[in-house]
Length: 135
Image (tube, rainbow, N blue to C red; front, side, top):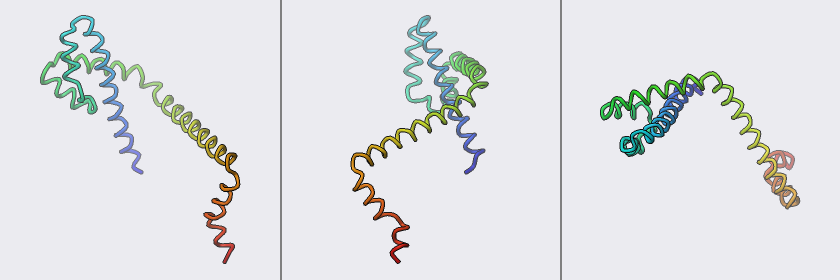
């Protein structure tokens, strides 16, 4: 497991997501002040925001003022969330893992209660220790 590469990939994904959020913000703003430009930007951005940097590069070629605006909003969003993001991610993963484990435990408990004898028979037949005892 290459933790440095995982961190780089995560940062790139987060950067693209923040670009998407900045795009949404700018679209909402210009939708009120310049609807035709908002429609153009919406159409231009369709399917292109998966890679935020490529999207910004392409937008610079077409409308540099919009690219600069999206970059400014993206930077502002990043500055606002960077302080509490690591703790939110950690606690969110911990809570999600606990919920997944709880749901799994409920499923296997319900399965065991609904058909306890066949469950025990299947475990006995597939238990590797049972094979060792027989020899």
